[in-house]
Image (cartoon, rainbow, N blue to C red; front, side, top):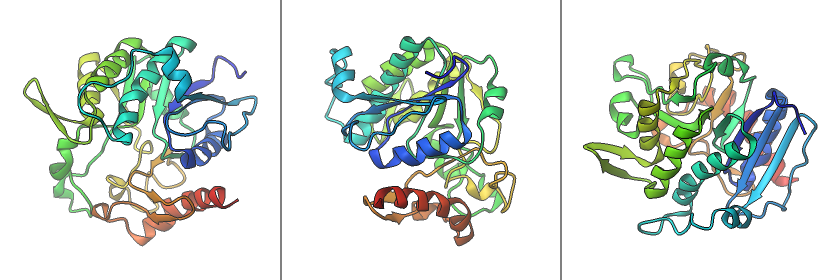
Length: 285
């Protein structure tokens, strides 16, 4: 087992996302423990082996449900598979924090590390919770893609990277998302909340979360136009890119990102080509 100085990460990814995520972490995040919730897939299929300081631990759905018999069914109408996982993963965060007594960083499965996250952990310091802003560009900048004005309704913060050193905000997210987490809006105490991103904004406000300032974390198709090429968040200083809305059919990537984001060929070559190559190589072999 790796040292107690290792950072603990959790993810509830799709099976085809796991190897690119894990291999990127082996390159840039050592020492670490990656806790994987295999919610709707067999954790024994193509399981990756741990290194001494790059540990991966699997929790299959049956094992998680056995320890949490009151978790399901989720209240309300049946949820889509994606919304179900987006609800359950916060309970997994709490479970890992209780088992390890360590801070935990939740990462989406479509995160890929380009550099060491140590500058981000240094910035977070002793904060009990830290969140990553969406970083939507205001329309006044005249950049391609979506804007703050068109997308502010989706929340200030993105769930692709969330850090907890205190159980209280993680437990609040677990309860709120169990109550309601769907792809859509909910009116709550006079405000409109979108999915778990809405609850994340509420938790950040209530628990005084640190808002991460490093521009190289959680770069994504909705904010990538803010960074000139080869800009501050270029490959030299980019920590993690969030490949949200990328579509993969099991062998080939069929879409880099939603067309509304306006990804350019230059951005596709710089940010997407290396990730797609690793994703498709792993799928084909």
